[in-house]
Image (cartoon, rainbow, N blue to C red):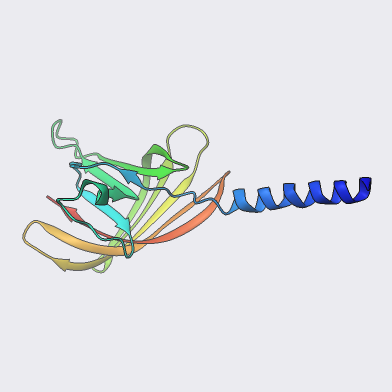
Length: 150
């Protein structure tokens, strides 16, 4: 009987660990009427300007135009917490950009945003791509779509 109880407990603990490991690392940030430069949503997610519940983003950034530094401030939702990102590197090509970031504070995560240019308009450019996250809570990669511009 003790062996059966110990086996059941081990099975429950193992199942809980597997379930915890499957928890998403990249989580949505709900921010209606956000003012941002680049705003990315999960691939397949619909955006409706008039529906505040659709303002769910996986990544967004802004450019400091007030001080003239043109610094880029980027943010991502990780484990249901808004995390600011420090830009480490950007590689640009005619087809898009590859940006590498690290989260500010602990625990530290590495974030890579691979952006493929789509249609360009007068004030914005559409992008698709992937966001990859790696850190002490695990690794995850998701696909996104969105745009950069005013």
